[in-house]
Image (cartoon, rainbow, N blue to C red; front, side, top):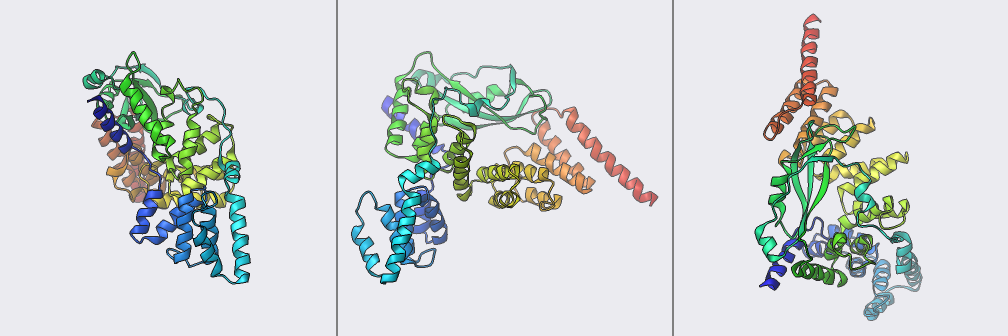
Length: 455
């Protein structure tokens, strides 16, 4: 019975993955004859050393699927993919023999250039972090100020989980009102499955925090991880961890990403470093892992800080259309005063239409104060989303109200500020700071009407 329970929990756990590796998706696109999409995905994976993607990319050049037929590139990519296994020697030679003497020279040159830049040694130099010891609470977790908990209520340990010896966690995202009460509370990650989610959300609704100095109510999204632990390690929990580790060591990119999250449960493995496992998953095209490796490299979390490698990984995940990476690149290049590249990646983030990053993208475009991103265009961007897809609609509405106010449309500013108030009143009272904004917009509308009458 226990074995069955562990297996089911493990399946639920895998189903909760935030971003799967995209090799299988590329294969599916190819089978569905969506060749250009498949070609782009294989190319992104091939450039980080994914052997199967390199072979498939070469095959698409050979077929002329999703790209122009090119025997030189087909030869180079397929030969590179087979560098270690030597299973496709006959195919490589067959392609080579179809080329003229002049084209064979070009093919050899192209292959050599691929080998120099995409050999395992070259990729490690360009992409792999230089690892170092890390404590159990990473710098990435403590580098930002978290709200201080003033009042907490312990969530109930589910009876069935306790009886079966199941442990786990829930990562919660939330916003704070002006009095430090949490609103818009959401479970963004949990293990195993959703076993502990309901009791966690029920308890956190009764918590109270101290709003960090300088933060505005309803503007920031905070996160914390609440763990459910029994007094003694359980065989069930150890078995689940062993299953995930086995899959990770066998090369499953999603399991590798998940295993990296188990830093609090592998104290018996002194060499365990989450960044190493994130890197393994990232090399297989796991977009979220690529983003988190970049984050580790930027902040020196489990490795030496290296901005150049971080940017390499951000470019990889951004090229896979991960909006948070596109936005982070835009911010990085903006700070470096490289406007062209900042514009390029911000435009990509805008076109990705990711509802999870919509507010952050719009806020960054607004704060740039650049004529390229007019108030009207930012408003249009925010209005393009279905509000039911937005995780935190209160700040979404408030930003729209602010933008309309600055554009001179005081009526719409009032409408959207009222929408924010209405949404909030379902769970809490409207704080004075939000009421003051509404009064400001109403006063502006009143004054504009008086001016029109006087004119």
